[in-house]
Image (cartoon, rainbow over all chains, first blue to last red; front, side, top):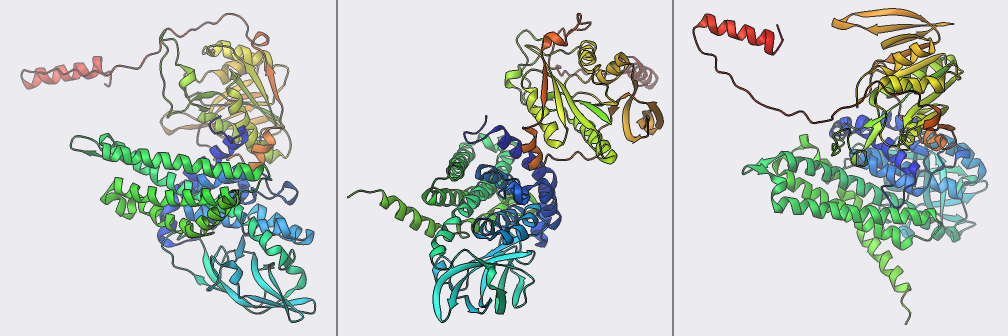
Length: 384
Length: 256
């Protein structure tokens, strides 16, 4: 056993995803990044392997695996290409979990088998121009009209939505003139009144699909709602903690990808008659990188394991996401430093990890929000 | 169609290979093992034949200590139906004749239509087991199959010969065939395959029930080849220098 949280099956999953990523993703990662090309054929292949439905139960066609399995798969994909990894991650956690956890049986049967096979991609719309960290400030409004809701508003920075078949999103709900608070809805992406903007031009995650979208008098059946408005929102937001664990895992993968390249280079590159790894300034840098990666990995797996035990992971998920994402930024920065000028040019592939790392400190709750969550959680335990 | 695939666990190409003090083998406790890469192609070919036929069974057969279960499970995760594990204690058997006798003892009751092996193992690289086993069981045999074409009671096989030549041979079944690497693209195990492998049967055969007779071949010494450099300055006129060069190429280097 090479990991405290692993069963034999986790090891086999890790090995399979690593082999797949090394053979199928790494060779095309630079090109996908350069062209900003969505990895459709890789998504299809991941679907065949069951990687698009890791968390979806077997009865809906998924693999029905746990968060530890999910985390290890994301780490291995992220080690090769963060764009491919975030496509799978956003689809599996925020794109699929709300339907699984709050959907009606009809919604589950309609969407989950297609999401599990990768035939359909899922997206989730939460962020708005004026509601990012403050998700409660959501302005999108769904007004009840008979058996339908009429939705107006818009969302920004939505992963996968240009390629997705199903979209879940949050909105205020107004019924009979009364604002019932925020709820989530699930709709097919070909719904009339849903307008999807052009692909954003990003610093990193360039091959992943990120877009703005608008709801213009979009009429949707009342049955599109997930759970109940108002009351359900806090519970709903809590499900996003799984998303934090997955971004933590992607952070570990991103850091490992850059670190391994820097380590290999430090053994090959010679200066002043010896390999640069033998200079303490480089060797110690690599030692720090390895140590922080190990700590991040343990935080992420521990949070995933706690989730699998049914425990509350509000604090642990925030800690794992915070530490792992800041580690990814540090490690990718230092990896470029180890490669020197070669690290700065695109051909060596390390600067891609650096560009891909920055968003990890922003998406699914900024570092500042994670610290806010952690500070609130730790003070709860203090008895005065 | 009942197909056995002989699968071996071998040291990975990136593993360390520390030699034991008595120089008889490597220290396996420090070695990282993987499925013998050529066997991957044999498994894939067997699965493709079964899938094309729409029925049948693919059985992974492996010999070795407890560690080989990991490799067996990989084969099951890729889609094989069940497995037979010929257990070994202590140092593994390296004599292909003894190994083949063990396999034939266990497999003669199974009546496989086809037995596939990889072209050779990445550790001892002898490439004999499939042919020896085939002979012992009275099967037809062929080596280095680059393409297979199963017919009702026979199999056509495209064999790789020397110098870019190929040969199609038709073998009556049952047959034992070694599979050339690269003839197909081995699949990855899917998540469902990995989870499903837990429920598949691995039949264990204790060493006392398969090891027969004494071995004909043992390993004398395992060592890392020493590299050395020798320089001979050839002096004299052009004719004598040329004569000496031809002699070296013919007798020392044996390239002429």
